[in-house]
Length: 438
Picture 1: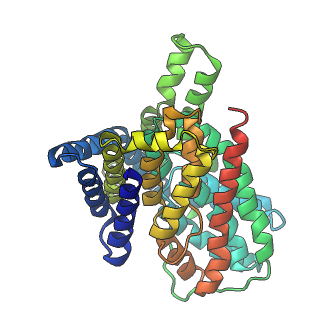
Picture 2: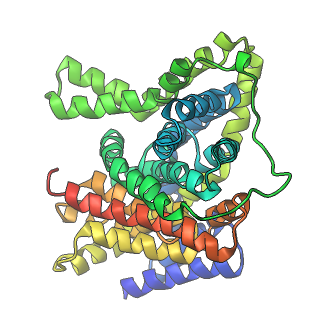
Picture 3: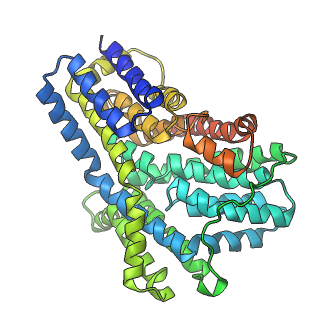
């Protein structure tokens, strides 16, 4: 019966979002209420579970995502993303251009939300394609693949960070494992797949919006831009390595844990960016604060959707459905990593939104933590990988790629959808291989 209730809840979620076009946050809260009541819990207890789920999920995430948005805004407004892209592309040359593009997309993608990074890099893609004479999609796919991988695998992006909180996984280790997994995934979905598109012709739409571009004399230095963008990766990676290498309660372990804490890492990165990309570039604090304020506003709905996913997860736990899921899958031979991937993939195909799919899948798969020997950090990555699979017409990313690259729906399936599915499958395979060693 509990599994039927979950199935009915997911169907209701699909109905509300797809058929009625209801906001994902409101839909998640309605489904959480419905599932709790259907399981027999008193309404007041269900409301208490929802409140608890929202609070526990946002307690850390609000800080991480808010600081992450500020850092991304400073990188975009200062021209740091522009200088990183132009310098790397010019140094690699046409022969190694796809590798330059994935490196650029990776560096820019880590601190920026996907849509912001996409819009920032699109003018660069168009410029490189025009100057090199190479097909637009061939140039764009490697960079977009790198953005997609950072979006699905790496904190401080919303989905992997939120799933890590749901699974109680170490965010620093998620980042460390995700960085290793990202390398083969980006290579296969980027340059390798792009080779099949060498003769794929498309032209940019006329009068396309172009992101803000600064003159050379107003740009920060390349080293400054790269080091500032990668500051959170450095500190979170330091924390994860420190925890693996040193014994608990030692001074160096405690310092690594402190500096590697995602909130502290992001705070340090923002403070550094305020100086290196703001004050050192001649900006006033008012202008810097305005940039950060505008950037944080864009996270409001993302935070609410994540909160809705946390509420749904908590209802599953408090109503006893989680325990039933554990009992049901105790005897199964299926890897928890594969199960989480399948749940996320099914929801992604049905819902479109990778973030909503990942959070809903995490709520369903969370009971596997503790009841099996699955590694929580790898479960985060497997769930994130599943949430990226087979992007199609109900996904805003599908239409964003289609319109900017001026493709037909069929061509978008052949390029964007195929690339996203490669990322998803390679991500799962990588998690299964990783599982042998960690």
